[in-house]
Image (tube, rainbow, N blue to C red; front, side, top):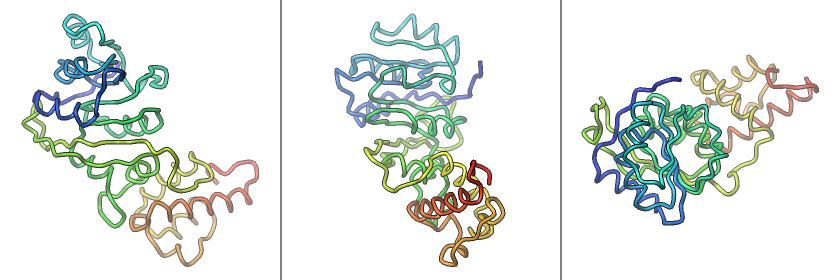
Length: 256
């Protein structure tokens, strides 16, 4: 089982504000990822009907099991290996392990919940809500926008964690969208397209699409770069590329 380095939240005032932002009610079942020594877990247990805490480190599992109230269920596992849909929670409140923020976030975006309030490394949070034209704009920004409405609630000083990290944290609210803000023909194709395009962000889209998909874009988009485009524009191009790719490869165009 993998063990991820984590900076544990020790400031109870920050933890209480996080729970308040999440508006945890007595009928809520809340997921916490990486409870550590349980500072946040104990506050959640006071407010929620049930808390499901996933912890990878056995020594913390033993400590939490022995000290937390009966409405807390501890799951000894790596969150990346857990089928979250089967757990039946309504909200997520966590201080996430900074080292695996990206895979956890992409996994959570595919999971059903009503609201999440999560603490990230500040730079990662900035990437989540970045706008076109900024250096932080990335495939993460586009997918977060596609799946949810996200905003930074507050900056959490590094002194609120132990061991003290080199950078501050940021508290982020994520509310899943009831419906997508734009149409995409195939979500897996869209994700692959974003990965390829943002990995080549200095190249024009015309060059990227010709190199990886073997099709030509209209001049309107061919000279532009992915980092300056709105998510809706990226989706439009992706749909066009997939359609042309499908015409050239009727049996499948995942790699063209």
